[in-house]
Image 1 (cartoon, rainbow, N blue to C red):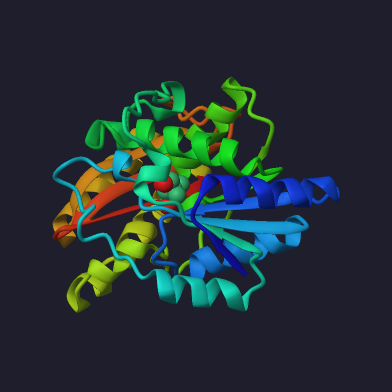
Image 2: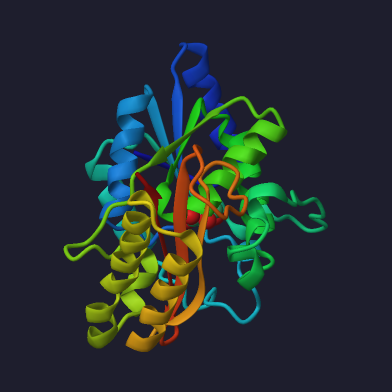
Length: 279
Ligand code: PAF
């Protein structure tokens, strides 16, 4: 496995692969890799001839008061994990490679980016859409893989790729969960024992909402009851929403289109997000 830190070296490597007709998969990450990432990385090795994992903690998607400084970083451990599963190249650019002096262009997504995460993290999707567009133009992958755990992010990236005619396919991969149902996340390391015990309740409530709606229940009361139950148990709820699964637009009734339940809530200083489909 090669670790590349300079764009010129990355482009040289990509050109060699392309000249022999090989296809390329990209898995964008911010490191602190866990089993959820590793499943996506294994998928990348299966889908294309070459698999690139990017590791870059992107400051542009953190607000000043957020956890950028304490975000878990362990490049050595990440590289050891990736080497074991047959990743060809890790793209680990420096901050100066990604945001050189006088960097002044951003992608500002609307549509699927409006509301939910954006209400609480206004800078987030501009940061994500900008870095992902850069990663796509740097690596020029045939496919890029994103976990469904960050479902709004996945839909925003799909929208960006479609709107800008970026020549790659976005693959959404199912959320990997711990026993008990908690979605795997790099931020789970922040949870203390008590919070960890409570955390699976978020997904349990999301599934309860999905089950009620699938059985013909009303959307508004199902979401409101779940938010109430989470608050009572000690979560600070940012949102519990039922949305059109593709556009993430608001919905009041079941209708024919696929729906998604999405929620974000705090346990102490740790923010958890999760979602599931209404079947
Ligand atoms: O999901 C993440 O880890 C990040 O938002 C991403 C997609 C790597 C962009 O920095």
